[in-house]
Image (tube, rainbow, N blue to C red; front, top):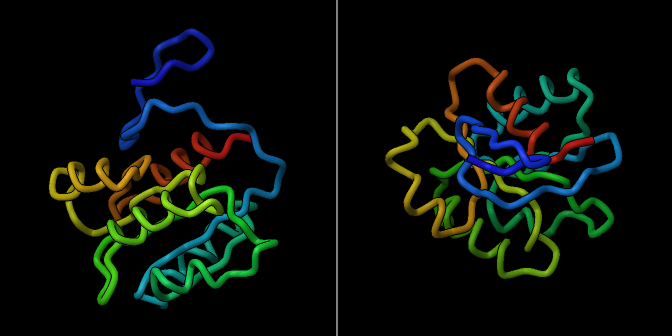
Length: 146
């Protein structure tokens, strides 16, 4: 549950109670996923919905994106080789560039499997892959309001 304009709001998948600043459109989304076909498909859907997207294929690549392209929100896969999503999120929280950027875990794993470690890594929200895209869109709009 979060407090939004003095009204308690429950948002499925939301793991944080922090407030999110309004952003200027278009909302910039960074997708970090080792499954490039899936990530590109997600990016295409998000672009149709009006978002500006960048896709990177590994956690370390997120830190190599141009500084002018700091995203409004990060969509982060959890199961990646070499550096999993928890390690990426922790590194992002330790960097000045991504310290306050909302992070949404986007994974095929069940929420119960990742929630404790995700909260420890300061991931803000969770959405399961392979379901309707609407819950992810709702979370993006919540953590990056325009």
